[in-house]
Length: 227
Image (cartoon, rainbow, N blue to C red; front, side, top):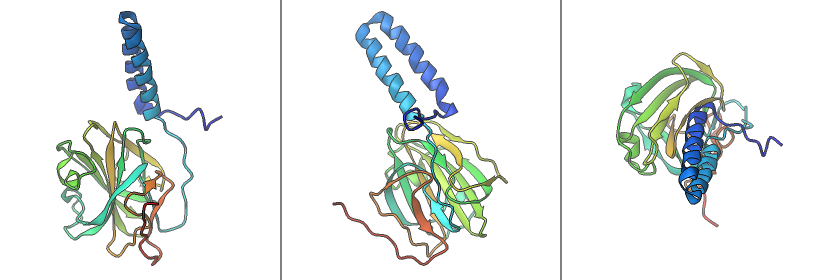
């Protein structure tokens, strides 16, 4: 039954209520408009779904912080507002479309050492320049293994609101919910140089479940092809 009745994230209820009220009003004006409202309200409920996830707990694993498709794997300096230096780190970017679950989850166990908000534009989140120019919320973490990583919520073309419930100094577990981005966006993860990603560009990830890297091993970088 719980596979059908998926929990709704609390941040979604105001939007669902708004859609429902507008739909009710539209139904008095026109039956077709009312049905359009019903469809949009159902989509809003679907958008804010927040299912439980089974997170791998092996030490050193980096877990995807977002549902979506890997749109970029490269090396880049973390956002300057995190004050982690300008040396490139391994970066994996996960793009969320409007049909993905948008609840974000911590990629590793550790302590949030810094949180920094950067106002910006709203380019398509799949574009490389989005990491530099778009509105973002960046978080730095010291993992329980003593390594420094970062993860960044980036607003997209449609997204206009980043929600981050984490606080500086907070201990957080891999797979634990820490926020969401409304209506399409992207999350980037920055990992130490030498990390070999275990996902490929184009691969679909599940937040809190998909392993994107293993900092505790020397596994070769994963490659993939469309079949």
